[in-house]
Length: 311
Figure 1 (cartoon, rainbow, N blue to C red):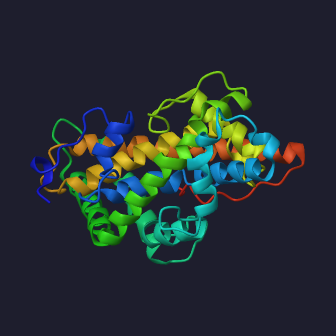
Figure 2: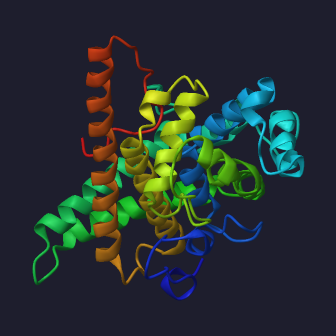
């Protein structure tokens, strides 16, 4: 990789479907930034299970799927529902988990496996970025600048070593499943109507913030009986979606830029800080939700998503 000249960042970041593909290479088997796309899919992985559980519900209860504007409109959903876990096109939760853990580890585990290295390296870079921003003066602090570059380089080396043909295939396969099946459940007009959500999410959701999309996550998680449904209130999912998007942007930048050739080190530092704040916001949302669950007498499952950034 050639640093800044080789792969310039998208100035606007991830704001829609096209900029997501440009930033992460997820729409192609070529490129070097598929790990960034996988991070987004890992963070928002429960969308797959919510969609699957909803489709299982309607295929078990014919009245629930009585009107989809014609049986032809169920063809793609049926392929996903019955091919799930039985085809390389529709990897199930355990199969996707094998891939995610090989890079990101199990965020609910404290074991010192290879995946925890990703979390440690990410946290170290966030901490270095915060120091860089807090103490930067007119004459840049040499030690803090070099520390950020070193942390950037350590994470970059880890991501480059993890990347290869397997992750390219996995990211592209999951991307296709998301766009061909999963997201279509949340964007289906008959499904949206049955959930009494007034607006159909656009094709750019969930790469951009749309209240209709987040509301659909909330409604489908509840009506499908998904185990972690109360985690997926509209507000909680928007916080999770935002941190997933920012994290993908940061990882894409880290992979694309050599730390000692990076002319946009301050951009990286600011993005890292925003990423850290967004992860902390997810944690705060979950604490609030946990309190609500205790009040209602319901138990909540531990989250496998949000690493303890900013410690």
